[in-house]
Amino acid sequence: MVKLWIKIIKENRIAKQTEVFRDEKFTYALFQEYISEGCYALDVSTPVIIRNHIMQFAKYNVVEFKAGDFMESVDFDKMTVENLNR
Image (tube, rainbow, N blue to C red; front, top):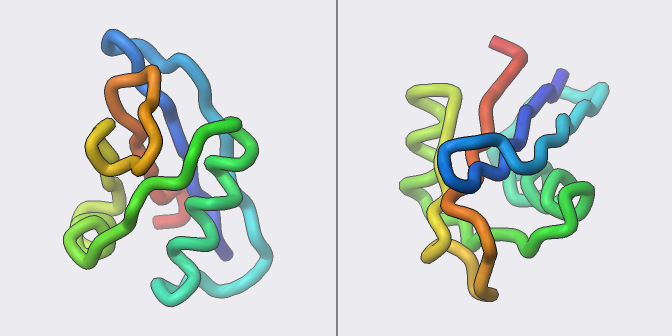
C-alpha cells in the first residue's frame, strides 16, 4: 500500500498538505508518478527527481525538495514527502 504525506512548507509552517493513497504495492519505479499526483492535488509543479532524492527517501522515509528542485519558480521554501506506511 502507498501512503505519502506531502507538505508545502513556507516560513517554517505548513502552507498546504495532501496525502497520496493507493491500493498497490509501493515501487520506486512509480515514485515520480506518486509525487506528480500529490503535486497536482496541491496545485504546484512537479519537482525534478534525481537519484539522490530516491535514495534519501529509501533510507529515511522522508525527502525534501528545495525551491531549486523545481523547473518553475515556486512561492514556498520546501516541499517534504513522508512515507506514512512504514
